[in-house]
Amino acid sequence: MKSDTQSKTVIISGANGYFGGIACQYFEAQGWKVLKATRQDGADIRIDLDQPKAFSSLKIDAQADLFIHTAAAHEVTCREQPYRAIFQNVAGARAALDFCVSNGIPKFVYLSTFHVFGCPTGPIDELTQPLPANDYGLSNLQAEEYVQLYTRQQKLHGMVVRPSNFFGIPADLSQCKRWSLTPLGFCRDAVEKKQIVLRTPGFQQRNFVSVLDICAAIHATFPHIQELPLLHISGPNTLSIRRLAQLVQQAMRDRLSQEITLTIPDGSPPDESFEYTSRYLNNFYQPKDKIEDFLGAFCPKLFQELALIA
Image (tube, rainbow, N blue to C red; front, side, top):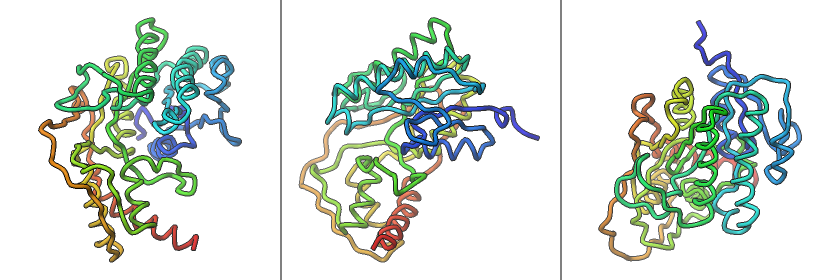
């Protein structure tokens, strides 16, 4: 017997991106009909965050139950093209919301980021006051506020999801553009350069959660979105950046019999701690994917890909 969600339809913006590509695979595997919204040819729905007015007024024939907005300018674009990135993130989020209202899509999930907290220390949950430190964090926070505004106005039921640092094997490795994500970047450096070079002592703590766990959490909370305006999603691993580099080194040794060099500047660990948590997540879902397993699978995949190119 099918579950209630197996006859549902979801629209995923940024479906050709790193997160969106994995999300499409996940929801299709769960029995959802997935409509891919991107600016690329072949999209089910053509959207362009540089043209938010056209996006907002677009009408579709299909009926959808959920819109997951993952299309956005990431941290590198925000740093290199700040004005365009702010426009894409804030105006693009509002356009996505207007698109949903116009097409009668009742539920909306916005993929935000823990970077709304700037330089995070101490325990952080949904009641912690955001304090962005750059355009990436600030533009995501402003987009969050649009989701909350539309929910207050009862135009739809919106949920903001703030994952910690996420990881996952790209749906299309040849098209991956998110090497600035530390787990991915470390693995590529290890495979291609046989070394990982840290610019700092790397004592800063970060929490890591898999994209599949984030998707599973969205799936589990879908029936309860109206009760969850904001949800943090953290994973089972909280570790330092230097420890992450050491785990990549171990994965290369264990899985590929390859030795790599770690270059880590000297320094002392800071006094402050870091804990990224949720007041609500465990009521619906408990993330389980461990970053060690990802590293053990991803390094060989990259090594094989490099061999094919060579």
